[in-house]
Image 1 (cartoon, rainbow, N blue to C red):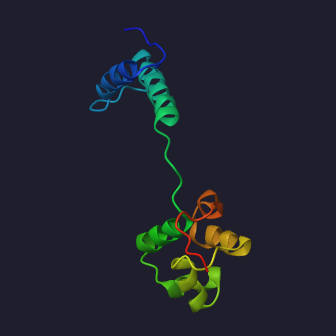
Image 2 (image 1 turned 30 degrees about the horizontal axis):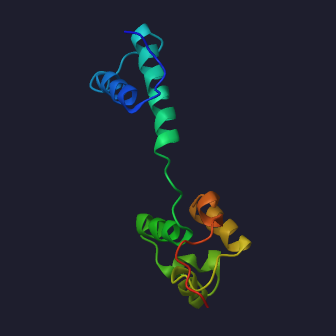
Image 3 (image 1 turned 90 degrees about the vertical axis):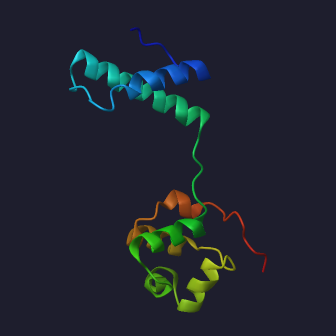
Length: 126
């Protein structure tokens, strides 16, 4: 079967059918079937990135997600954000993150800086 660019929704669905056949028994890399699988995956990923982009999470939601993932409490954020009352203000969207907070949250908890530097979506006016 010939590999073609994915230009339409029909092409996309066809490529998904083709690539899904390989998920139960993934072909060996470097073989003709392995190369076909790799090319199909690349085409599908490129189409999805263009047509179904994923927005970055809101900064506060990213922090809350990391807290949930790591079993962290607001007290655990004090070294990155400042005093406990400041942590609560950030989590309640009453105080924006500063550049130094962003850097420390990224360094200490591995939260992507790209998520933290964008403006919060639901900031409460002071």
